[in-house]
View 1: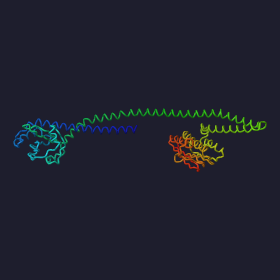
View 2 (view 1 turned 90 degrees about the vertical axis):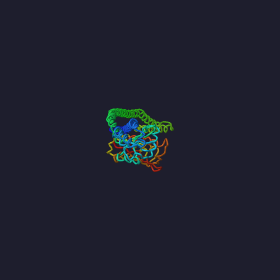
View 3 (view 1 turned 45 degrees about the vertical axis):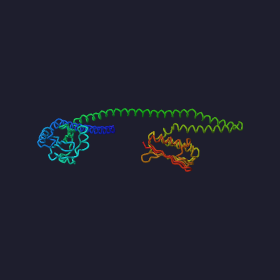
View 4 (view 1 turned 90 degrees about the horizontal axis):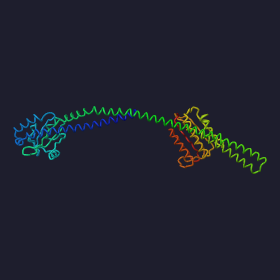
Length: 422
């Protein structure tokens, strides 16, 4: 929620800045349009009727008369300068007397506005010679339009507006929009918070439901494994054990009174049945290790090592006393040892096997080592030791653990599993 609230607040702030910039740009455009409209009214409604032939000829009295009209009706703040041009670049009138009668080249954009008969505006270039008397005013907006003089002659009317007036108009428009805009964005942010909280609660509830379903599935799997193990132990294993005893007894009787060749067959059948019983019991330990639940990890690992010891392999188990693992971690350590020892029994042909479980830097570490024939850990064979180890690696990674395999041909194998001690 904190991350969401912070991120959404940043998004709202960014949206506010963007909207403010758009409003500011629109407000400035509107202020410039207003300045153009004022200039158009002043040029066509005031200046154009006051222009005479005498003014164009440079008559001082006509200039004074035109100046009085301009000062009375046009030359008022924010307008700070007025110029009237002929199209050949001569200034017919300006409230700055030294400019009257002088010629300057008209800019291409000015001539374009004249040809199109439109009002145009631009920031005044105060470095130009004709604008040197306006430099002390600071930044100005230069607005110009073509007007019609005596005899249909086209003239250029130009006034200069303080840019501060444009900024002030822009600020007024922005101030009128800012409270509504800020309030709307704040409301948008506040509305999102209860919705996000509700969504978070629903997600948490769904997560709890998924965890409960997963736990029930795990419990059901454990119960089913226990049921299968119990059924095999009480049924098939017991029956086979009985058959092995019966065959052994039959072999003894046949040895005393039976045909000479039949005794060996019956004894071989009894031995094969006993091997099948041992393999089934080892399988039962893999399906549901009762010693892990009843006596702990050390006893369960000893059960795993028992078949190897029965084959004449030297085995050793080193289980730390202070492990105190969570059930799921203990189960994963057992499954890891089981898979590693299964590979040892099937592929390694070792003379010595060691299993150790210890704590190290806040983790629990399982190490299964043997001095067997070894293998290539990078091999992708479908029936060798790597397949089961790859599956085990996926299981360990799901528990945020790490599995490593070090093996060389003829030098044995070390399988290490590291889990966070929880």
